[in-house]
Amino acid sequence: MKSIWMKQSKFLLTIVCFMVFASCQTEYTPKPRGFIRIDLPEKSYAPIVTDCPYSFEIPTYAYYVPDNRAGSDPCWFNVEYPQFKAVIHFSYKPISNNLSEYLEDSRTLTNKHISKASNILESVIIKDDSHVFGVIYNIEGSQAASPMQFHLTDSVDHFLRGALYFNVAPNNDSLAPVIDFLKEDAMHLIETLKWKS
Image 1: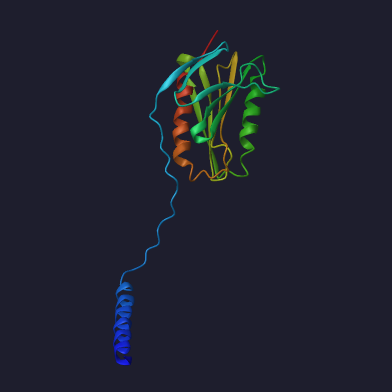
Image 2 (image 1 turned 45 degrees about the vertical axis):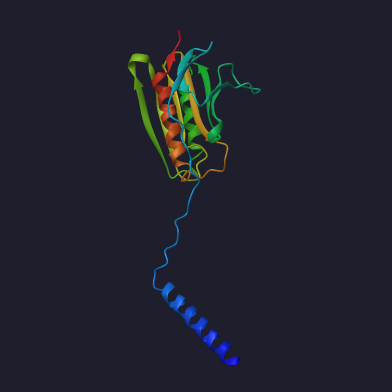
């Protein structure tokens, strides 16, 4: 009985040793860190017409929501993206010999992100045919609260400012595909913006 047990244990020990040595021949490669998959909808746009002195197009997967908070002006609004927990806040102001004040306010609000930004890139917008002029601020950095802000004006009567925010903790490295996607939507809104007389 003892010899059968010895034979079986030697056999098991041989198999275990063989498995250990055979498994150690392949190199271990750690798996890369994964992120959740983000399905982006197909781009399509619809016009937004209001009683305010502007019109433009927004994506069909976003919502135009008037800003009804206390202290908001009547033509302030948000473009909300519930599936991305994102919103572009817009504030509109009529110009009355105070354009330089609005431009400085826009710059100051953007510069509040300097402490978390690695870079702020400015792009000038000049659309002579529709009298739309402005600046886009692309705010780079993984901890920046707002990856994009901009202001638009006709230099005479209208001033519109926009800022993209997410309702999640900022980690712009993992949000990069969504940020790029929403920046395209903001650019489409800018391209289709028309001032009303």
